[in-house]
Amino acid sequence: MATKASPGTLRTEQQAAGRTAARVGVQIARQAQRVTAVTHEVTMRDVLFKCCFVPRPPPGEEEHGGDMAAHHKKFLIFFDFDETIINENSDDSVVRAAPGQKLPAWLRDTYREGHYNEYMGRVLSYMGDQGVREEDLRTVVEKIPVSPGVPSIFSLLRAHQDLFEVVLISDANMYVIETWLQAAGLRQLFRCILTNPAGFDARGYLVLKPYHTHACQRCPANMCKQKIISEYLRQRQEERAGRPFDRLFYVGDGANDFCPSVIFGPSDTVFPRHDYPMHKLIKETQQSQPGSFKATVVPWQSGEVITTYLKTFLDR
Image (cartoon, rainbow, N blue to C red):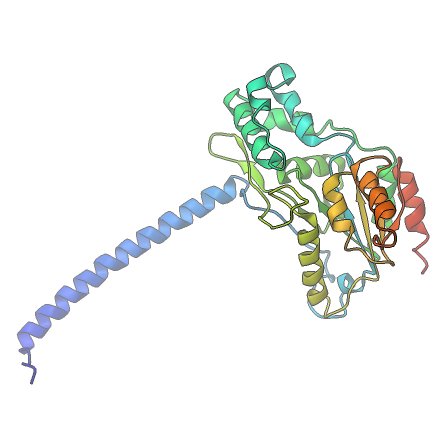
């Protein structure tokens, strides 16, 4: 049988327990304050892991319920960024902010096939070491030229936002893409940007991270656009109360734009830039495996070709 404690002993133990609880409470509160401070600091430094920002919809179009405007968009169009929307590779463009507008040979020699994201991380770190800061990068990025005819596509999409959901998917990075789109007045046209996270750290260096990991042997280690698009389509169909889009469109140029295009169906259309890697890979597939590539293929040299094609679906 257990021995009962005396009332005096109980009071002493209760007081000691109260003092211990108070100390623990103070420690927890202080820890919470530190976590809040760190969270605020990270938020104020352009959060490194922002991959897909969805802008607030206009009043009355919030995506709640199956009958809202966003649920009735018929078409979904994806755009690559480098050498598709813009007429350069943005990773090459930002090097113009480096001293002498070039990189040392020892740095260029660190590149490994399939690991370009890691390489660009080293490039940006080197540029930071050389004193390159946000204003230097912004000046260069805002001057990158748009691809021929592409403004006509965006004019059409802006005029028919009730029909088209527009998404940007790119192996560039969030800082470069958002900076360029904001300068061009195009940011609000895109529902979502799917790209590698990037933001400035406490030193003022632009820090680049990979988008995800995957098992695809065809794509670079940091990004498989087929996996990303497949996940996006599943998510959007669920959000649209089970309703898929009537048609999918994809505008791109590179080898990593070929991978997602193989899952597009006969009612969908891909727009590879003429004689760029995506176009060449499609042609090789059509020749070596006739009938295996299902989507309609419309090559383009000017975005006007895409605009003309999309207009044929406006009244369907």
